[in-house]
Image (cartoon, rainbow, N blue to C red; front, top):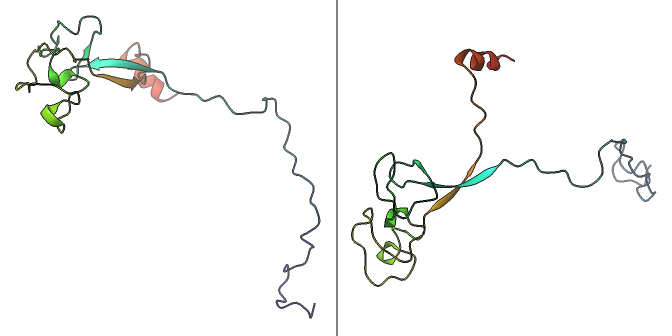
Length: 136
């Protein structure tokens, strides 16, 4: 013990070069390998640029918003609309469209879609049922 620099207990007490037994994991009923990821459901939605109301995907080109009456075939509703880009469009266009929320006949127009999570649970049957569900 006199040949050691430090005399504290535990310092070089055991030989660190001896092999240790591998740790054993307790047996489980689950198979080995990565766990399955429990992801939320998602869906693609087209929403109005003015009121954010959900739109039906079938007739967006010729329709108007059912909530606010805004034209849907407009620059503000397009995927390529960007206020910071040249002529406010990410696609090369020859002529600037002055009114961005009015209907136009741009051939490059595509409806802007967003990906949303399915987070809504089933609606409770009544207010009383929702109250009772809080204390389960």
